Length: 160
Image (cartoon, rainbow, N blue to C red; front, side, top):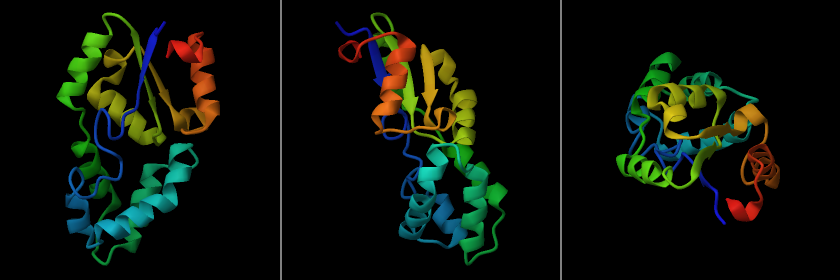
């Protein structure tokens, strides 16, 4: 019997962290970097970002350094923070599911983005429990992170 519904953030509740074309489209314009170049830079850093070995502050400093335009990394960070959102239809679904199930978030995210999302979007009020890869030091799709969550919740795989 299902007891827990596990949600991801990026591409499910809100934008992927590297949605340069739609959500974060101001960043390619300001930096003068193409979406493809930004994607490549993000890919270089993602493994360390999602396990807490690197911060988004460091990533934005790197992007500013690579930019042909003079841009303050803090400005990039602010634009990024302001653009983060949660889909209204996802909120409705979660609200409905919480009537019958425990609903949790398991996200691959950097520490600083996770903190921003949690505060700005009030994730702790939306979900029964939150798990973030950078805080655990392990990320999806590793079985370790799923086993950790199952053990922490005291449930079997077939109950999630």
